[in-house]
Length: 196
Ligand SMILES: NC(=O)C1=CN([C@@H]2O[C@H](COP(=O)(O)OP(=O)(O)OC[C@H]3O[C@@H](n4cnc5c(N)ncnc54)[C@H](O)[C@@H]3O)[C@@H](O)[C@H]2O)C=CC1
Ligand SMILES: CCCCC/C=C\C=C\C(=O)C/C=C\C/C=C\CCCC(=O)O
Image (tube, rainbow, N blue to C red; front, side):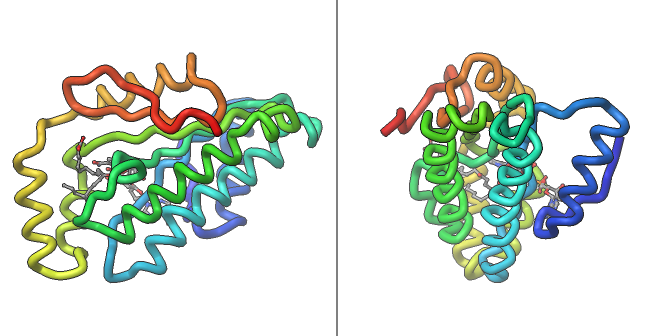
């Protein structure tokens, strides 16, 4: 099924959640995935990459939280390797992905899990060549930085969406709340930033 959802809009998010329940039955997993890499429109990048994820997580807690008569569930936030390493090609993008790791670790803490029964986790993939890369090159902070990004990306090992999806399933099925899993080409996925 498809439902329109601009993640910067509360009403869209609620409508998409309702439509999913009407068409598919009870929802117990939310994957916050929408993201952009636009260093020129940095406020929009923050609104989508951070605001959208927090908005989605808050809605999931409202709908799934045991403290709200819900049945618990899981939120997976798609961060990035740029959320655990300072990738210089997109400083704003990098800041948003670090923010999501911090938010996930804090909101995923046992203090909240015990209240809500909702696990909050982050997946941090390395580069997959999608439209995000093309857009990020085009909307880099300067043409020189865009060119450096494109050149660096050329030299990276290819990673497929299937590898990322496999890591996501592993995180969903075995990961603790607050867990942040990194997935890179030709490596087993691994956890970083274990709990406080
Ligand atoms: N491609 C990569 O190398 C990596 C991507 N990621 C993250 O994975 C996620 C998906 O990225 P990709 O599939 O690569 O990019 P993509 O550009 O192919 O897809 C991003 C999607 O987000 C949607 N989107 C943008 N603004 C939106 C809004 N306001 N509301 C709803 N949807 C919106 C776009 O329509 C698009 O479908 C992003 O959060 C990205 O930061 C993380 C690590 C690596
Ligand atoms: C080549 C970097 C491009 C950054 C912007 C475009 C898309 C990026 C999406 C990501 O979230 C991936 C971020 C970083 C990948 C870059 C470097 C990986 C470093 C690998 C490592 O050191 O292990």
